[in-house]
Length: 98
Image (cartoon, rainbow, N blue to C red; front, side):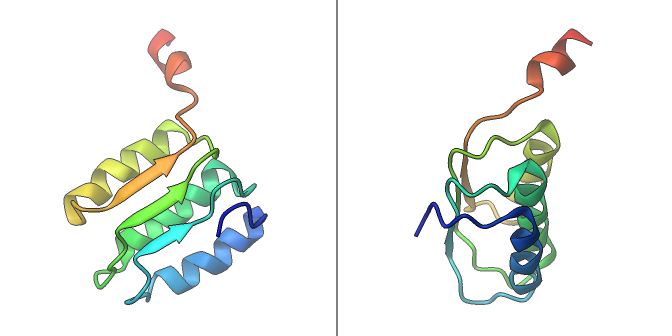
């Protein structure tokens, strides 16, 4: 299901379970107001779980920042089959102009 309105605090609870998850392959939390920080924490939890079987994170319509993109690159080295769909990256233009 998507559009389940998981608040930013809810992402913290998801991360606890994802750190030990050995079964969930697809997590669909599209259109939830967890913001980029919540997405980052969820992805970090997958990274910390050596036994993760996660294949797809659907975070559509949730814009993420460059820190998330950097973490995703690191996670892809550990879990090369993991796919993440999100609402685009913000902050790229500002960094490019700096």
